[in-house]
Every structure is written in structure tokens, then in C-alpha cells.
Length: 209
Image 1 (cartoon, one colour):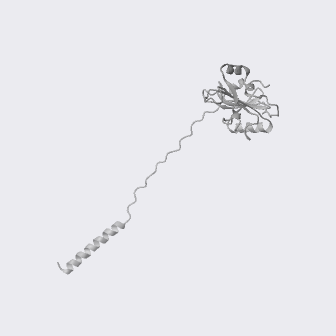
Image 2 (cartoon, one colour):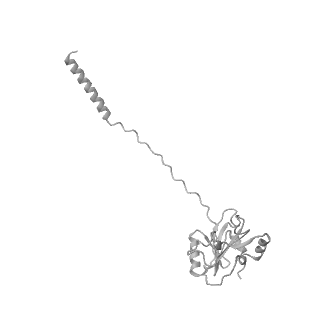
Image 3 (cartoon, one colour):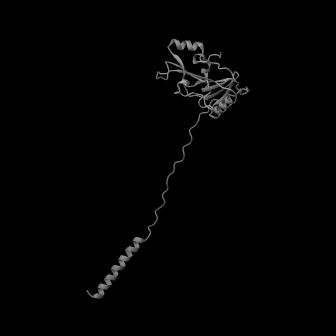
């Protein structure tokens, strides 16, 4: 092979390498943009409205100071029901004094009123069981009673004006409500507040002394 032929081949080889290098550096064609599927937010679960009762024109009571209506949990419950519990060996105790159970008045502005009775009736405070009955009572007056009722209204309780008292009730689930659908209920008089887990259990309170 002559020197001129060799130079020609070298030139061709160099040109081919340059072409390959330029091809490697050339930008690739953009792929079609991918679309990310988004999931529409789930619709909110349907909320069953609470039963409504048209309140009577009874004014919201403004509590006044008074002597405690009950001294012990034996005084709180009706005599007939207390006698029935005694026959089956049940005792009563004030869970508020135990300091380990929730009081239904703990959520009141400023906490539970002094002198509250968060009563339990069952086999005893040291027996691990949920088979017991509960009632709660506390003296409350003036602005404290007003603030407590405003807090209950803000929490979703419905106001019912019944027999000269003001009740704040929450709709209960099946098995935990009365025939009208009401569960947990607070009842305010002019001097105190009562609590039950089911509204019709208010009947088990003994008349104040």
C-alpha cells in the first residue's frame, strides 16, 4: 500500500470516529410526558343528624348558691334502686375520690365543681368489671353554670327545656340511648347539675333532701 493510500484511509477513519462522537452527544428525542393519576378525595361520610327537640320558652336557669342536695352516693340514687342494689350485694362509691376515673364534669371550664359526686354502684371499686351503674351530681352556680352550658353547646349537645330544668343531651347509639334516641345527658337546675349516660336514667335520682 502506498503512503498516499494509507493517509486516505486514516482520514476516513478519523471522520467516522468524529461522526460517532457527535451522534453520542446529540440530545435524544423527548419521550411523551407521563401523566400521574391523581385520586379524587373521598366524599365525607354521611353524618346522621341528632334528634331535634323544639325547646320550650323556658329561660336558661341562672344557678344560685345553695346547700348541697346530696352528701353521699347513697343519697343520690332513689331509695328503691339502692335497696335493690343492696340485695344483690352491690356497694356505692364516689369515683371522683378515687382519682383514677373520668368525671363527666372534668370538661367544664375550670374543671369539675367542688363537692361533686361521681357515683358508681357495683361490686366495688377494686373489682375489675364494667358491670356497674353510674350517676353524677355536683353543686354549681351563677357564671360557672352558664359557662358549663355554653361549653356543652359548643361540644354539640342539644338543649332541651323540660319541667323547669335545662337539659343538654347528645344523641346515643343503639343500645346506649333511650326511646327518643338520647344518650349522655346533663341536667341543670337553679343550684346543681346531674349527669347520666342515657337520658331516661335521670329518673333514678332521689329527690333532693
